Image 1 (cartoon, rainbow, N blue to C red):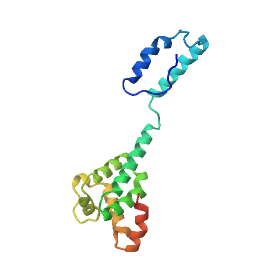
Image 2: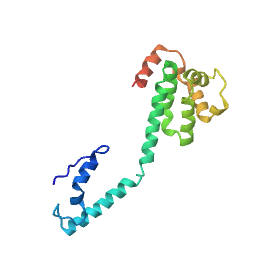
Image 3: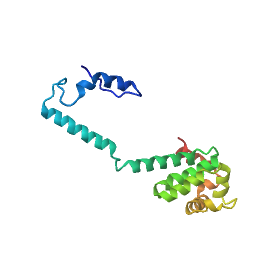
Image 4: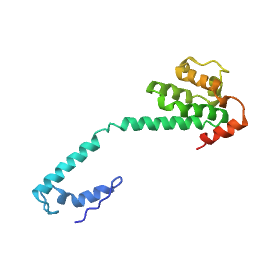
Length: 165
């Protein structure tokens, strides 16, 4: 009997299992396996299951990388050019150095309305207490000293190349 070598979605795999379950039992000679081969199959099955069930050490790192990429995208795509340039360029330069708590603070900033973010980072409005963090102060400092914070058509043209997706 031929057992297909592919994954099945939803309930479709049950039909294959029902047809093959008798021949897949340990000790069955339907596949003509020797005892040594059966032992290797069982051992390999246990190894694969253990690998599958164990959380890889790098999984947390890949989730953190994905989060940073998502935050970078959100900071670049606000829909308001000035904020896209200021926030996006700061994020691109600083995102890799942010710790978990700082990422949470930065995400709280990104959850604000775009006009409010602009007003906070350009110091046109006072910062609410829940956003009064080191991250926002660093962002304000960057915006005050950044060439992107000053009107220049050449500066805009030069920097927009790096900000476009």
